[in-house]
Length: 134
Image 1 (cartoon, rainbow, N blue to C red):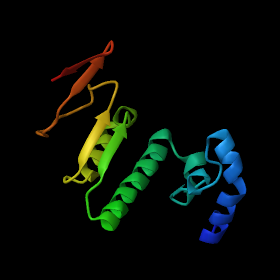
Image 2: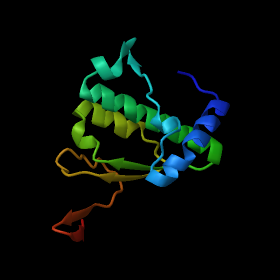
Image 3: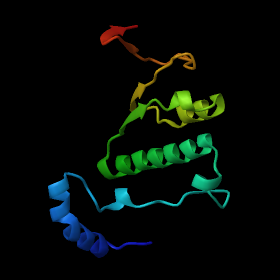
Image 4: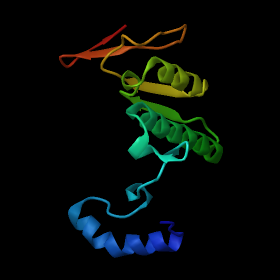
């Protein structure tokens, strides 16, 4: 369902007291379902987990580029434990799509997949609550 700014404003006003009382947001674009398709088919119903993750990542990359255009500065990408869930082809594609002029903060539970490939990076490991840098 398409919503205008007026519709969203009315929805915000309608739930404002309840949101304050409950301490959560009940209305807004982040609460709407977005229908995404892969080759004309519903990604949620027909896409593999890797395809669904790839579509979500593509949206985030597009969002980063829009924010760059609006703000005039490259975004900082926070990538939380995503690479371990992707096959090697999708991992490489994502690495190649991340803009070179951006900072990236990546978390992962496993570095076995990581090919540093000449990249400048710092690795901080957390083990048993202790930090160590490589």
